[in-house]
Image (tube, rainbow, N blue to C red):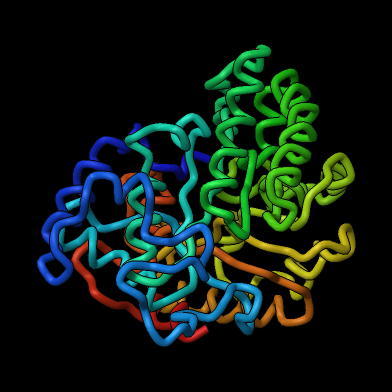
Length: 358
């Protein structure tokens, strides 16, 4: 599904963020190396100059948060300074983390959005979540062939990221069951390689939770509606979960591509996952159409209804975190271009407030 932003925006992000951060007159201009080394010491108890007192945590550790963690992807209304900063404030106000989905090679680039995100996280108080890989799941295109050099380079990039940032979560492989359809040979290589990645990351940091991401509707055999195929639950691929070692069972989910109204979603739509895994469950993407189109009408009120429906239907299963795909509408392929919690120019919406309150 072509819901990701089209084309690289790394250079725009890094240049915009450097400019924005340099204008923070309340704290003085940020030094160049602050983007490479965010203001989070490796040892939180290490002495600082000047000393900071009292020694109290400024935010609740992730493991102590109550309820389902919520977040949005990096999806500002624009990269103009006011709207770019406004995105991080609204994202922080409405949830716990901001996610980035992108090519693993970007983790070692000086133009990586993750460098900016960690600098912003220190200022606005949110967690950074990285979901990465090396292929396009829809087209089957492989960005980096898994020769011996690239295999080691990818592992080095992931291990370096984990050692530097000590993340709670790390995703490797987006909608891997969709990739299995579009490039079976490439998927077989990925499946074997994933095991090496998992072991390397866990050796670097046993506490980082590592996972691939599956597409829920495809896994259920639901290819009808806006997917353009047929719904056939007997064609489900739940057994793919058995092929992986992971710390969380993680999915993307877009029920609005199959169902026209949130009330049409079956009561066991999400709880069914627990029939196939004992691991905690999480969602790196979810969304619902805001406006819709002829024959598939929707509204911001319907978006808010879906949010309430989702949380109601997941009450009895262990969901660790959930991500709404876009805070603001993005330049993505229809119908994903109208799945933001807000349209560009808005500062709130019924859907945003529903997300914020849950």
